[in-house]
Length: 433
Ligand SMILES: N[C@@H](CCOP(=O)(O)O)C(=O)O
Image (tube, rainbow, N blue to C red):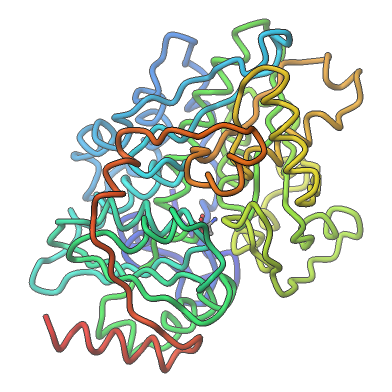
C-alpha cells in the first residue's frame, strides 16, 4: 500500500517514514492510496481487540521495518480494558464504549502509546525524534505519559494557557524526561499552527528531527480505527443490525478513524459527530463549505478546535465513505445531559462524552429504535471534576492511574504563540541535551 498526501501528490516510501515525518512534505496528511478490503471480513465476535488491531494493521505495515515488532507494540498498546457497557439499564440498545481506562483517562492513550512506541523503535538515542504535540487538554497528557523514560524520542507539549481543566494541566506538566510542557499564550489552534509552521521550516525540522504526536500522524489514527472496528463487531453481533456510532469530535482524528474503520469493512451503520459550540463542522455539514473559525472556550475543552486538522482526510474520501451527520451541543445542553443521565441511571459522562449522549437524546424515536447505538465515552469524568461534581452533587473518585498523577510535581515553561518562541524553546532543549 502507498501512503499519499491529501494535497499535491507527495507520498511516503513506507509507513515508518510517514510516522517519522508526521506530516507530508507538501503540508498534507497521509492517507492510503487505496483502502484495504477484506481485512476485517473474517473477524467474529470472538476476535479480541488485539487480534483485530493486528488484522487491520497488516496491509499498512506489510514489508515495513516495524512489521516484525507489531505483535509486541499491539500487546503493549492495548493493555487496559475497553469495555462496551450499557449506561442505561432501561435502554438495552444503547452502549457506551468506555475508552478512558488507560493511564491518563482518555481515548488518546491508545494512539499515543502506539505512536510513541513506534517512534522509540525507529529513533536513535543519540539523535532522538522531537515529538511535538499541540493539545487542548487530553492529547498532551497521553503523549507525556507514553513518552516518559524513552530514549529514542523527546516530547514537547504545547498547551493553551487557561483553556484546560485543572486536572488536565497537572497531567500535562507532571512527566519526567524526556518531556517538556510549554504553556502557550494562545488557543489550541495557535498551538496547532505553531507545530505545522515548525514542520514547514525545513532547517528547523531537520535540526530537531521533528515529528507530530497529534492525529495528523497516521500512527495515532490506525490504533483508534482498530478499536472502532472491534466495537462495531461486538455491537453488531448483539442483534445482527449494524450499530450507529456517536462520537465526540474536535480535531476530527477520532471521527476519521471510525470512518476509516467503516470504509475498511467494520459493520457501522450511521456515524454522528457530536461537537461542542465550535461550529466549523456543523456549519460545513449544512452549507457544504468548510470555513475554519477562531475556537471558543467550552466545557468540553478538549474539543475546542476551530480548524480541525483531519478535515483534509475526511474530504479526501469518496462521498459514500464519508457520509455522516453532525450535531452541535452547547454548554447548557452538556450540563443538562450530565445531570439528567446521572439522575436517570447513575451513569456519569465527562463533558465531551455528554455531547454524544445529548446527540443521542435528540434522535428521532424511529432512528433510535432502528438499531443499537454506541456512544464513544472519550474521557474519565474525574478529569473534569470541577464541572461534573456540582451537576451530580457527588464527589468523583479518580482511577488509580489518575490518583498517581496527583502526587507528582509539575513543571512548565511559558511560550509565546508564534514560531519564533517555539524555535527558541527547541534550540534551548538542544543546548541542554
Ligand atoms: N482533542 C485534542 C486536540 C488535539 O487533537 P489530536 O487528536 O489531533 O491530538 C486534545 O485533547 O488535545
